[in-house]
Image: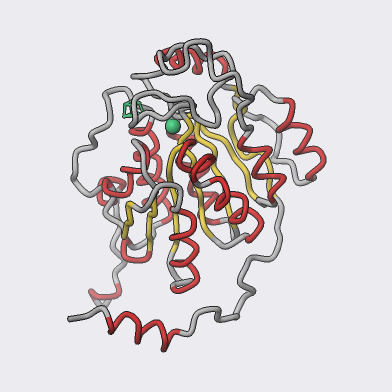
Amino acid sequence: MDQAAVPVTLTPKDYKSGLKPVWCPGCGDFAVLNAITKALAFAGLPREEVALISGIGCSSRIAAYTSVYGFHGVHGRALALASGLKAARPDLTVLVAGGDGDGLSIGGNHFIHACRRNMDMTYIIMDNEVYGMTKGQASPTTPMDWDHSKLTPHGPGVRPFKPAALALAAGAPWIARAYSGNPNQMAKLIAEAVAHPGFSFLHVMSQCITFCPEQTDWKAIVDERAEPALSDADEAARLFLHESGFQTGLLYCEQRPTWPPAGAAIVDQDALAGLAASFRV
Ligand code: SF4
Ligand code: MG
């Protein structure tokens, strides 16, 4: 057999950059990094055919820790960057990752429009219900009565978002949840998300051991879904509005046309090449 035709088998380690993460020991984000690299190895994707785009925050550092193309972007704008990349390079497998503050506060507008646009990409929110990098402010998913921070002495007093319900209402066709304490299930879900043709939203409960040490209690309340994913939006709405938020697995899945439509070129590749050339010195 021609040596050049022999496929190279990559291991999860091959998808790591070698940079040592600066996350606190015990941070749930380590599990997400391991799950992503495991899923990419499982899918057998060449590194040069994958891009991981992130925003700003502890979890958004993840792009630097993989060996695929990466962009550690602007706060809340990871999905906007990823949408532009996918429009220009539809051949790439695009993953997007960030925290609850990045994705649901600063980036909330991009999130809802990415859900309804349904471009073929995977979005992972690493939700620890807090702004970790900036020392423990309440985020859009912080419980109303969370009074563990001097910054919110009586709790934020504001209802938290339900990310899965928000994604469903905005039109996301694939919604799953994982937990940092179960990286094998998470890796399987990421592989499924990548394979799903359309916008796949994975909500990861990823503990912040430093500012929310009580989140170690999550392991007692996560509940792996035994039933198949829902495909009826009414049933999914009832689930997402009334659940505890700790059910893991593929929760909702429907097939609907992606954007842009197959075969439609929304980027003038000649103009793009000209633009790229103008940046070369
Ligand atoms: Fe992880 Fe929290 Fe430490 Fe940030 S502050 S690295 S989210 S444990
Ligand atoms: Mg956070």
